[in-house]
Image (cartoon, rainbow, N blue to C red):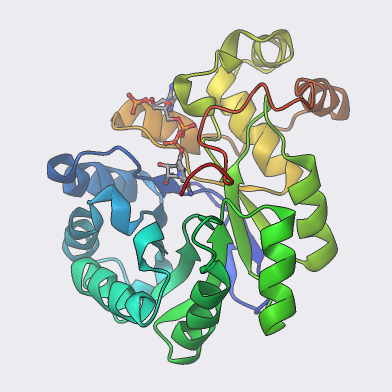
Length: 279
Ligand SMILES: NC(=O)c1ccc[n+]([C@@H]2O[C@H](COP(=O)([O-])OP(=O)(O)OC[C@H]3O[C@@H](n4cnc5c(N)ncnc54)[C@H](OP(=O)(O)O)[C@@H]3O)[C@@H](O)[C@H]2O)c1
């Protein structure tokens, strides 16, 4: 079984650096897909209330017989539940669906800045962690302006910021903030969601050729060597295995630098929504 590195968060808890994300895994297929992921060796599952598949994740966890402390489970607070006591109700509902007493990581999914209640949502997250319902708390899709505001209001630095990040879109301003503040970056869409033709790009194709690995494995390895946490999604067992088989590969400094140079820095590689526009 793969020996997946653990990364220490700013609250002392540790997160497996490679996991399995279940965005767009259909609810009726989730128990099977997560069960297969657990069978092939994944222990970190990334879901969200909005994915509509927390129940399937919970069913797979219950059926697995794997000890709770060997699993790392993340879910997320959806955008229409930042206000009032909605975050408290939302975490209770998520835990019920997952069949858990606590998640390892709870994230504010998007800041939705037009509504301007993400600071309140973050204050509620701090309370959720204090009550033991989430061991660690973090955010997702937060830009530097959002991060600065929530930290100024609470003095609590998110353990994690989960953002779109792949070779064509490297989010250097946010990753620099994360390094300066001790926040771990999680790369969502690490393979460009299949929308961006990453695998044909010369630095990736050439590194795959040179190492005898697949382009997907090269991209995942690049994330790991940059220190990012990743959880590629696939509904195919062969790809679940392929995406986990990245620990006998070491990209050279030159191969990493060539992939680093793929992002022109103009935002053109973005495949998902922009945090200021998603409200
Ligand atoms: N916080 C957020 O706002 C946010 C947004 C998006 C995603 N996420 C999280 O990040 C996770 C991963 O991102 P993602 O699912 O959007 O995109 P992704 O992992 O970059 O890409 C998934 C796509 O790549 C394909 N794929 C997977 N492994 C492959 C391989 N080895 N070779 C070729 N193709 C492969 C999958 O197809 P098949 O399934 O057909 O194999 C699927 O079409 C999500 O599942 C979710 O947990 C978070």
